[in-house]
Image (cartoon, rainbow, N blue to C red):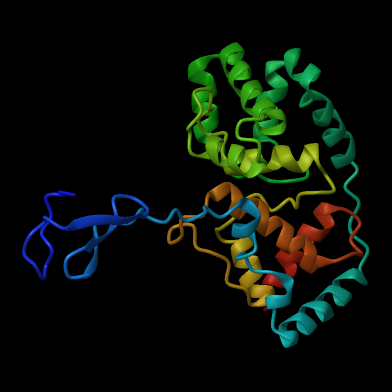
Length: 272
């Protein structure tokens, strides 16, 4: 059987036969004259299974990673803080109830543009910071176009299905990979939308990193070093939501509401 391949020993292909077909282009050959066997070609590359979202999340810091001494210190600060009754915030509950309705699918279709602009500039229950970029974009677009764009952003964040994971929709909106993104309506306002839509689920800490971001709070109170978004390839949406879940787990019970819990985090951060 002529394979146009010479036996390394006999220097001829007159007696070379195919013994076995392996993966890729690799074959096992034998010289029937001298009995020598060898491999020819390249094996198929092994496909590496991509990690799932759950696999990746398992690598994120967890409450069990906290040093026991830091955990005890944080527990003492919490006990001290909870001895004081929080100042009542009578305007938060009705304000958030209003915007829970505004952010519903039906509410967004008939929302007053002024309500959407006011939301972006309000610090009731959570302070999103300076909104000059958003306001400039809104004023340039006009109220109707601005409201339409903000409505699409909020509806996609809360009820979008592509991607299916909220973390990835949040990333898409922050990084402007969707055609309907709104300039200036980014991390702090998107997080504030989640806080209002799911008030028992999200802390009113609106930035992942910054002077009093989730990353800095975790380091100062519990000694946990959360990923630096500038040095890892983890998406910002995942960092934002997973750090929220971590802080909630570390906080435990006893707080009146999320504003109360956030007040503790800001207070305890400066006690570290």
